[in-house]
Every structure is written in C-alpha cells, then in structure tokens.
Image 1: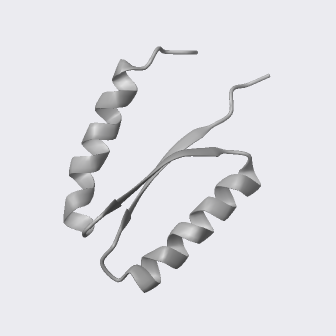
Image 2: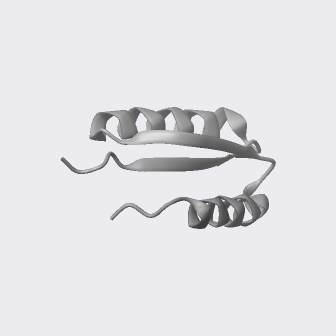
Length: 67
C-alpha cells in the first residue's frame, strides 16, 4: 500500500474573507482525495509565502526519506 500524500498549505491573511474560503475548499478537496494536510501556515500576505515555504522545505529535507 502506498503512503498517504501529506500536504502543507500556506494561506494569506490579507483578504481573509476570500482566502479562508479557499483554505476550506483546499482542506475539503484534500480529504476527498485521501491526502493528509499536516500543516497549515497563515502569513500576512502573499509576499511572505516564499519565506514560510522555504522553511517548510528545509524541514522536509531533515525528515527521513521513505521511497
């Protein structure tokens, strides 16, 4: 059996009335596909997203690799 897909979602708090709905749809669709959302990061705006994504990728590199 294949490992379950794990996801991290980064969402902007700017225009949160819109991005909150996008986050809810993303979580719902991930559940529908059988993926596991392991982390949701909220950032002030889209310009802050690359910083958080970079940190998430660094953490992933430290995790044991499972083919």
